[in-house]
Image (cartoon, rainbow, N blue to C red; front, side):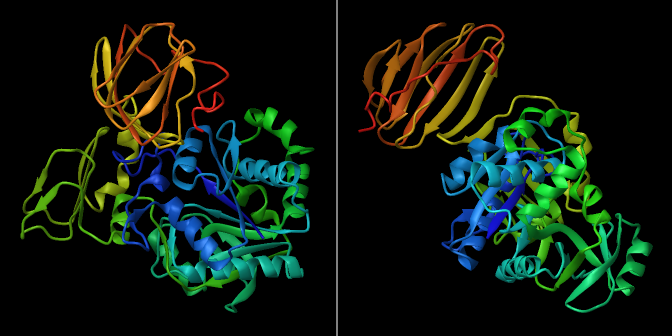
Length: 445
């Protein structure tokens, strides 16, 4: 059984913790099994494996999220990278081609497609297995999962089933309604549309051929940016005749806003936070190494990171996106496949960054044309490579790299560096990568 997990998102609704690089699914704020916080991505993958230890997971995502996925899951999953954002139908077509042409998956195999960000219990994944069985058995070409509504909501689209049985046909789909219309939908037995479906892989490939002339994964990848932006619902589900919906009555929360995210947290405060006894229904998340004090806060969200500080009424926090879209500035924290970086200070001709390299990892072998760099080793040991010359480094060592110098560093243990960039017009575009690294030279042993 194959899972395609859709991991998109621009990181706007959970600002300032989320950004274009670290979208909401990477935030480690959910209660994990071992008591340590975990992200939506980590939680969904853990739950899939708990229900089906043999399941194969492919994550469909953009280029900016690949490092974050590798940081949190390593090589446990396949990643299908979209060259550009084109909505869910093109992303699913590309992933289907990836499964057949790159992974060698049979067109007869069941595929379940679901988003990465709902907060659910194990019963949800048992329902996904039941959907796959319905698809393979021929009950319908396309099997949807409809969430039993707990209240009339304006935030979700609706599936109107043909009856109230556990598995039924689909009468029609409805867009996000106003509140009064949502109440009427519930009286008709309507279900929330969570964007979850199951089918055979061959079905997806067939729809890809019909709508966009799909031939193979590589050719689709090359012309991906020219594809129409369209959702799977519009392109396929709303046109399909052989379709049914499985009614799901378990816990399902779309945690796309601070208000709903707070409902899943197992503590009121994370980080250096003090709240006095007059605070009520308030959640605080502080990623900064400075204290946050809250007094008399009621029904509020307070979130602080290097990218900014949010102080909001919980209900109003749902309307954050247009304000964040007007803000510009460099991403100040990101998790990468090799570790993480945190921007500490930005001046006109300098930038100071804390770099954390995980043990056994290294940076790309690269150079910069317009800036000098200086590393100060704060913790750990490693091996630096400067213009082909190796050098062991230890805490307190300083390594200087003038513009044009090819350089990288390998972490023998977890390595923490303070990197100072010096020059005019410091930019992420000022980087030239080269073949070869310290692992290939045998430093990693």
